[in-house]
Each structure stands twice: as structure tokens, then as C-alpha cells.
Length: 175
Image (cartoon, rainbow, N blue to C red; front, side):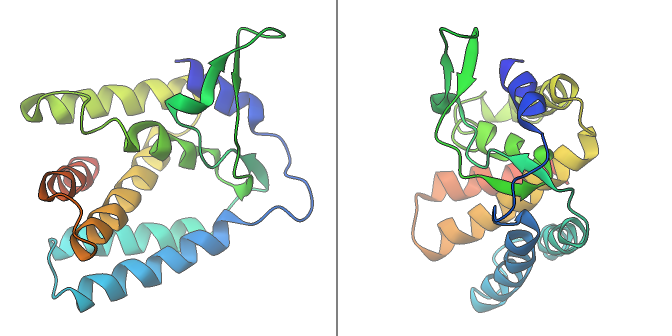
């Protein structure tokens, strides 16, 4: 997978002053928990608990590596100096496994029929982790936590019920 290889290549020591994914993940733990309670627990407590736990655990330890932060398929382009390049970084210091989230976030609604979603998602996450030389479980945990965060946001702000349902499904599959 091209994006996984790009992710691995970008994982160099982060420059001084780059915002920390550690801080972002810690704030997500609070956001997920408070939004879930405020919305009167619209998702399974085990999914939300796992997402909060993941954000807290991942926030506790973050390597000081450069993370693109917005690596999705529209930002991966054919290049002239090299075969592929990635543009439009957010630029965080942290865990490169996070970037799998954005690769799939906008596509998991169209990756496969609902009956195939678990198999397709599992394949995509494994392919990314292998190409990026990352721990698959770490990649899965980032995706699960962000899917819960996205599902709660979708429910609160009235995004389509289908999109919220897919986010919840992804969170459950990854859990």
C-alpha cells in the first residue's frame, strides 16, 4: 500500500514546536466521555469505554515522530521527483499509526457493502500496518477511538443517520 510506505518514510524525528498528538488524544478522551454522557449514551458503553481507554493510553506514550495528520487518498498524489508524494500535512508529533484513521475515514462508507465491511476494513488496516511497518493493534486502536469520536459527533450534529451508523459499525468491528 503506497500510503503505508509514505507514512513510514515520513516518520522521522519531529521538529521542535510541532503540536503533540499526545495533547490531542488526551482531549479526545474527555470529549468522547462527556459527549457520550451528554447525549444520554447513544453508543454501547463498551465501545465508548474502549475509545476513552485507548485515547488515555495512547496519550500517555507518544513517540516524537512526525505524523502527517491528514493523510487521505486525496492528499496522496503521483510525483515527478518520486513516484508518490503526500501533500497538505497537519504536522503533529506522535504515533504514525494514527494516519490510518484518515485514510479510511472518508472511504469506509464506500469500501464495501455492509456485509463485507468487517472483512474489508480488517484487510485495509492490515495492509496499511504492514506497509508502514507498524503494530496492527495500535493502528486498529486509533481507528476504533476515532470512529467512536466521529459517531458521537455525527449524532450530536445531525449528520446523516447512515454515516453515524457506519461509524458505530466501524468502532464495533475495530474493537
